[in-house]
Length: 148
Image: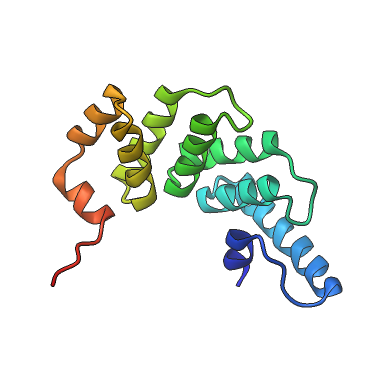
């Protein structure tokens, strides 16, 4: 439930219960994030980016995304890549975005592979080269094949 609340940004239950849940969840995330749990770092970034139980703060979100990305969370790698692509809280930097997208795609993140392909479709040579360098197993793990 907690992850789905964070992913959707939707609130559930009555206000008192939501406030209590958010405080407990945020403290638990913070505790896990400070001991280098990459998934907790990613989710704490989501808390700050979306302003869940706290004031939205893209600077703090990026800080936690970067920590999670460095510690191996493909979701955090995708999030920091998107910040670089869109210039959300960071100066737009396609080269760094491609590096993070490649790392997340190599870890099996299908959305990162899709975003990398979108950048390549715009004619970005670095993205094209990264897509070509991915092992076929990386691409196969990141996409679903529909058979008829």
